[in-house]
Image 1: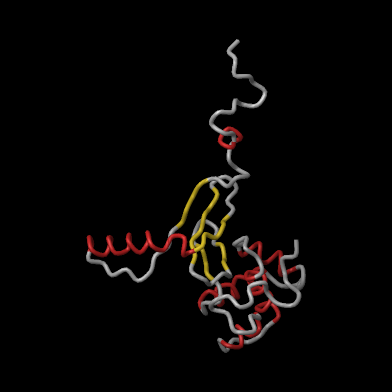
Image 2 (image 1 turned 90 degrees about the vertical axis):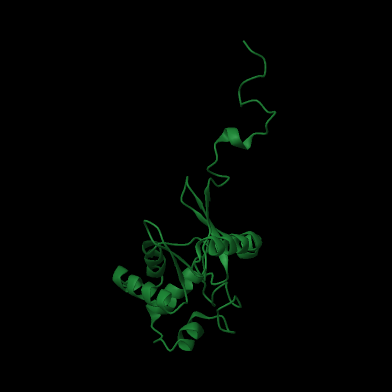
Length: 176
């Protein structure tokens, strides 16, 4: 599995990215210095859908820049979040997301994997909920975040993967 793209991120052309889609172009557009670690940190986060932690980003960046420190990765991640080039997902261990398009997340309570859920799948119901909350509370809703939790197919118990009419493995339907 190639994590760090060699010729530019897979995410070229996504919303919020410059026309050339490159990390260097994104950094230049924001007027940020183009340093090797900064460019690689952005490429790593944009180049994976795994929502990595800072430590994971550090491990991936070190494959190309072995002397980069964890502190450098943390500083660059904070800068990229502040500049709107990367999103930070809150939690006990912050995770980072290079997908700047509107979307929600599903977190597996078994393995901790985070999966993107396309925003338009949830938009009509979430707009209705936002309107209702605003109407009932008098609050002005400017944004919202929806997070789904459950078990991914790999973490679901074997019993939940069987059909309703199928007996457990190794047992027959007959009683002894």
